[in-house]
Length: 249
Image (cartoon, rainbow, N blue to C red; front, side, top):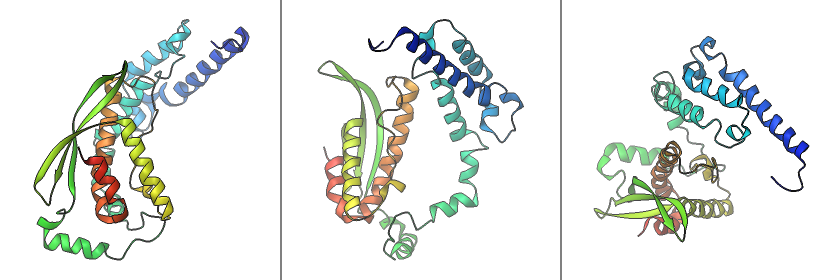
């Protein structure tokens, strides 16, 4: 506790944190069994909800004065939304998903009118659809140590389509972050907004970065990010050098 904070102030802070957490619990989780079936919270594991409630009722403030209080429920809800047939899988089968995939106005300024022409070329000759691009996948993750500090390393396989060659690279999140900022800064100079295409998971989400659920979640999101680089590489020539530097050994 900071020396400038009195015991009374810290006690009030503890009460505020618990009251806020309890309000979230009461509003969204306490009666999930009575929620409409369209609400993903109706599918939340009751055991997780009960565990959360017991934690909030604990006299040991360290149990609920931490950033990971809702982690188990967060990852559970994320998995429900991604995999339960009523949610994301159903969306992928809907007309709205197809409309989203065909949405041309992803950028602040209009892109070239060659999108339709490019799609027709791919349909007529699918073998050439990605000939100048890359296939990029995260194939493994691991906790590494450097100078006494631990971090998560991502082993990435890169295949260059035009030359039928492949290699592996090791990247950490800080390198993703620096690379992403480089792309954003360069696109700003061209009055383009690639954030509607490229979403990088936040730099700091949870304090427990070595949590296995968190590692797998971030791996999934970074893999989605890498997949979209291929589109960026083909569409924006002024970003190619930056992408090349990032994916080269």
